[in-house]
View 1 (tube, rainbow, N blue to C red):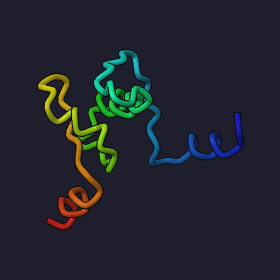
View 2: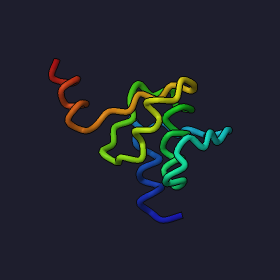
View 3: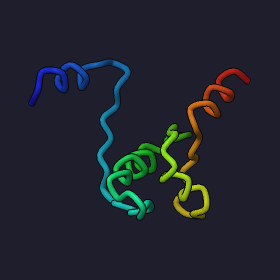
Length: 79
């Protein structure tokens, strides 16, 4: 395992999340599914991305993934 991975895994603010189910929500770019799957498994409040492929998740009723752009997230932080 590269040294940088070992260093990251030892950060006190990092939580390792295991994904046990693959939802396959994004068909336009299947490689993006690893991020939605992790957000669901981690019960994340938001998945922050400017990638347009993730917009499809806004129209899927279950599982809920709150997709926001970087600008929207900054606005949430400032409110």
